[in-house]
Length: 372
Ligand code: BGC
Picture 1 (cartoon, rainbow, N blue to C red):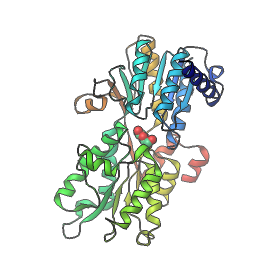
Picture 2 (cartoon, helix red, strand yellow):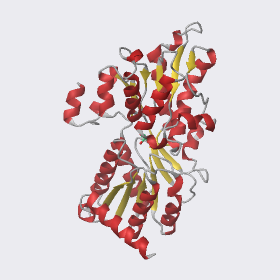
Picture 3 (cartoon, rainbow, N blue to C red):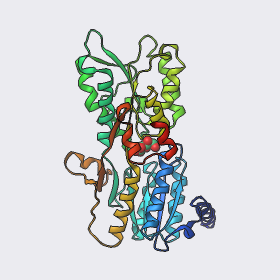
Picture 4 (cartoon, rainbow, N blue to C red):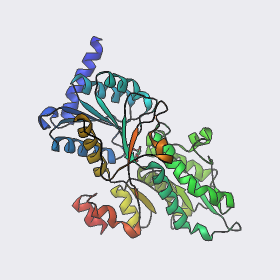
């Protein structure tokens, strides 16, 4: 017990430093703890800072922590928020290993909001704010259909695609993949699109899904897998497309492809997600084909508004988000209960509409200037 308190104390102090002053940085009101999963995918740095700024704007005290894709670390961070008396906690989790800490929070009457990623295997929270993750996958695949002109492809000259998925510990990865396959499967069934390497028709084929999944969304894992494919299953074919689940992995895949003489002058059509600056530049330069823009500033704003309404006992009403219903109800299914899932809309971005994230002020001024 003593050991645990010491660990908590160390994390608490470290947390204050990370948060740039902890309590001092706050608006003086109740504490909102913000637990972000990782920093190797850049969006989460922005997400954490934006959540903190939004909380402070509404008069709350806020602290943010990033967990380096390690659930044990995140559990300590969230426990430290609870020890400090947080009234609400925003969690972008790593795995469902966060569930016991969410149960502790519920016992203390703390409001937990699952942020972007669902907290699976928990019945101890009520709210989830995210994007329409199925649609993210649909958009990725639609860009591949357009990029390959698949509607004109023939069985005599089918196109070749290889499939990548995100981390199997992240509920989103399943929705992204299933959304994408809902668009690609009809072309595969028709014989105008051929899958090179493992082909899970949906994420329900867990064995094959695991083969294409990328643990913790780590770029080096995707790069190595692409290199292996190039030396094995894809050795005697030319890939026309790669389904990449996000920008970080898309760029790792591109690196592997560029090292192969076959792709030096012409890369396959490659999807992405997050509208990371490096990928936006890659799209501008004709390498990565598409990305999916999710306005995370709006997500952060919506998450804090949701907390504010719940803490004040007001009805939840989030402009720009729809409460999941019908087919989309599954987005809020934790496996133990269906939480209220508020969904924002993702937008497909290719070379022709790079101005969309630019005009939404998604990039810094210097970045925006380079994208012009
Ligand atoms: C997020 C993506 C992100 C990925 C890796 C997913 O849960 O929705 O935006 O690229 O995690 O961090």
